[in-house]
Image 1 (cartoon, rainbow, N blue to C red):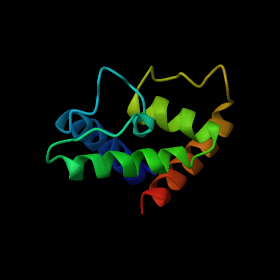
Image 2: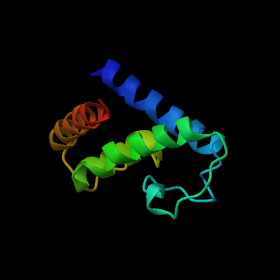
Image 3: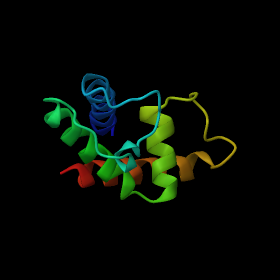
Image 4: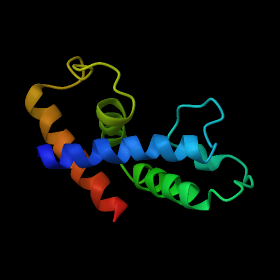
Length: 107
């Protein structure tokens, strides 16, 4: 599982680097920036495509998986954010499923 977690962390890091590089951020912290009007990114098509791919994979996840991927990898709110929502066994089961699903959708 640790290998999969590292992969998702690397995807999150590259996602934000691509946002910054393509000047797509516009002050927002959202994985659904692709809903904004089309803009000429002046040679940053590769970064925009990468961002769109990540957002597409994220958009295909169910609500629980989105919450987990967001809180654990993209916007690390705090370490035990899930304690009030899930038991440990439920959280780790949902987390494993969310990670596998997210990485599968990226392929």
